[in-house]
Picture 1 (spheres, rainbow, N blue to C red):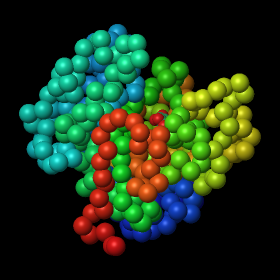
Picture 2 (picture 1 turned 180 degrees about the horizontal axis):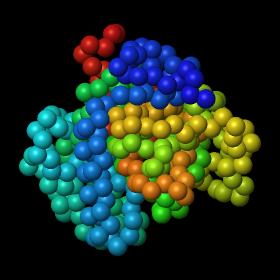
Picture 3 (picture 1 turned 180 degrees about the vertical axis):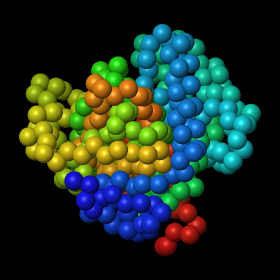
Picture 4 (picture 1 turned 90 degrees about the vertical axis):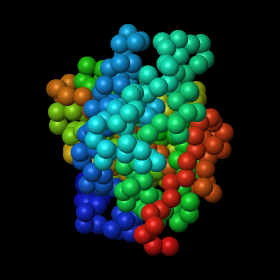
Length: 304
Ligand SMILES: O=C(O)CCC(=O)C(=O)O
Ligand SMILES: [Fe+2]
């Protein structure tokens, strides 16, 4: 099933990648990001998530993007604005986080981070804006591209917390089930090698046109779609690639996917969901929410 949608950033141009993305809605792009800093970000997620768990007494595998940041003595690893992390501590310490922030009534512990996202180094955003990925986004949309910090996340998945994994869905369906609002693109970035010993992602890697139904009896907002519908339509053609750190999966918001996890997996996977939208088709439900909105410019070398 991988035929035609596995590409390599070292050999394929952003134009070629954008072309495949336009045709199929999905591309596995090997070597999109440099391996070593990606692994460093994965270790930071592990440490930050461990600290959060210790403070809260429970597993929380849904974190803001700045949870890829942690003190790092290597000055060549830099954040979004080019700053090193030599004197940074960690997002929990910098924020003054206390356990009272965690789902206190209607509060969501991530809100503070969404609003203060721009104050963090954001190592992952730094890697993205220094890669070819922004050129691919611009070549696909042919217009300016915006990221909503709130709509990006850091996650980890492990066999023992399978109940916290994600069943079939199309991204942004939680916010809207109007196909016009599914204009965005997700870059799924594993921060370690995964797919054999650690969970990865399973997709139906083709452009489909519709937003799939929710299970019977469910009323929105609801992210997931009816599992049987997906298995009946696409079950034979689901694809769970293996990834090396630095590879990414780019897919549009119609592409159906779920966590790929089996009982026998012995390792944890850390990952980032990075989401962008074209400026002229930014869904109102996303724009109306709080948090940092940032332009993702094409690199200076990108063709017009
Ligand atoms: O990382 C995963 O296992 C799935 C996450 C996902 O698809 C999402 O958050 O939209
Ligand atoms: Fe998703």
